[in-house]
Length: 240
Image (cartoon, rainbow, N blue to C red; front, side):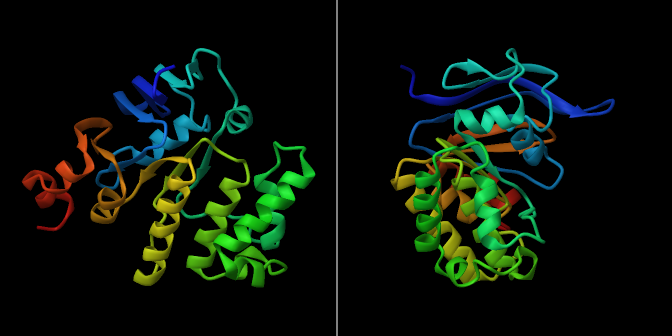
């Protein structure tokens, strides 16, 4: 079996008459953290939404464990069942539901009640503040707590590949460090990660490989440490 968990080939997608992604190709191997960096409007979120089935691909191939999600027109909820879950940009938790109810919603494709209960406990161990706030409405949590909840909710689907869209956005530095520590721990536990992140330095430090996206096209790809030390990347994305 190929080591590629996800293989994207010549992907094209957009909104209305506008194409955002132009023949985009990337892959995530089993056990990898792959970072995708780029400026605002480069198409990073569109890429993740397309992989999740929320935005329909116009052309190209998205092979997840060898199955072409585009050709088979797999709907978003079935993509989650296959093992691909997303923690979206801006968290998008259910603000009127409690923390516990948000976690239960993350397991909506599952019927194993004991397993769901065990995974909720894992979420509480990973993010102890969620245990303390489990009966509180999600909308009353701080930004950092909401980000923890969004990640924990995505993990309730037991994904093989976790898509993280801007997990550090708007968070205090100490919370960012905590979130990235969790990403590393999840990866050690066997979860592959595709990480979209404006904090390019943090993303490339935690990733195995990286892609640079510019106006819907991949312009650079290499091992993360190579990208981190590339003068062009440092000038464009690391503020040097």
